[in-house]
Amino acid sequence: MKLFDVQLPLEDGKYHNKFSMLCTEPTYRIEKDIISDWAKNFQDKDGKFVNEFQTTFHSSFWELYLNKAFHEMGFSIDFDPKHYAPDFILNGEDGFNVEAVVSNIKANGNPESSRTYEHLLQNLMEFSSDEEFSSIIDEAIVRHSNSIQSKFIKYIGHSDNGKIKKGYRDLSWVDETKPFVIALASYDQIEYGKESFYSMLALLYGIYFSPDNYRYELKESIKKPDTDSDIKLGIFKDESFSDISAVIFTCNLTLGKLTSLAISQGMPSFKSSILIKLVDEYIGEDFIRNIPIEVTPTTPESLFDGLYIFHNPKAKIKLSSEKFSQSKIMEITSNFSSFTFSEGRLTPIRARMTELRPLKEIFMREAELQYNRHLYEENIANEEKHFQNFIEMEKRKSDEMVTKFYLEHFEPKHRINKTGRNDPCPCNSGIKYKKCCYFLT
Image (cartoon, rainbow, N blue to C red):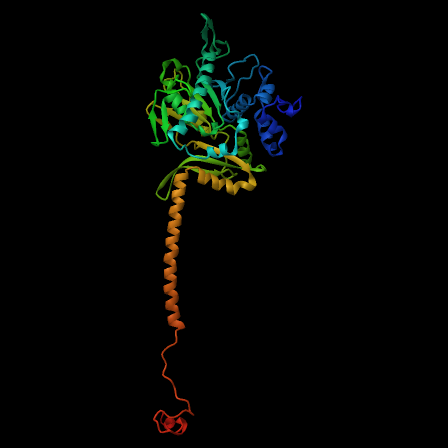
């Protein structure tokens, strides 16, 4: 596919700003090549894909990523043009049916073009309160709930004014005995990169994080932002969703992802990339959960970093973990009172930032100070206090050692004064010492 062939000037206003950046910014040349590689073997079933990639971008970007990811996992994808739905039919014993969807910013929401550097720095910071957490996560929950509902209905079918509309599973080429998975990528607000896995934990399992208490709590619903409407949480508890085997999710599929992959492969890049990862670690006596890591070929970001699979405990058809475990994708399971990360998988990404390479050192330090700010600042203060105490102690030791050394080597000894030969003799004879007592010595 000729993804980057354009007919109109890029300034025309028709094209998505991220597509325009890839086409016009020299610093995105490698990233552009990576997307082109993702498109290999991808089939445009309806002839609209290239236009949608250039104009709306996100949904096509997500499908290209999934195409690459499924191939990397070893799946064979059915791209028969007659098999127009669902979006991905994965063949084989471990295969499953996939509907891809993105959550976009609501119609009257702040567009991505209004994002400032301050918004980017906010991604590096821990949620400071329950209020801040809810302002972001609740909006995400609403957007994701709508996206999942729309794709679920398309798959199972629905009734419209008494008329039954068949779903994708009723199509002759769809094997409904295989798991059905919804693949959701989040672009639902300016701060979508800060969602991590919190929004899906709440929506699917009813497990809601509280920054104020620093623990997970069980919740049945939230209020839709700026309304009195209730949005149900823990939808996987509902048997009516048992036809969904799992949800594949990410909020980290950005142009920065492409930059990180380029750096990881040792490709030349004008930018550096910093990941904030959920790494349990003690610094002094403080428990640090989030560590900034610079992406390099020796500390790379994987294609699958930031990708989650949330399994439905009540699914009629369970999704096999074999392919995902081989790729180390993070899988999450729950009993609706707690949840479990699969062991030996890729550490969850909490945030990612990319910047021009000359700013790397400033950027890295900013990441360390912004994320886990209270713990880092306390640790730094303790280090400075310890250092000052150490200096004072060493100074006292040094002063004592210098004094001792000086006394031993440089302080004049008490000496008996000698009488010169021409001096008066000490015997008070009045004669010069050399002609008197000198001869008695």
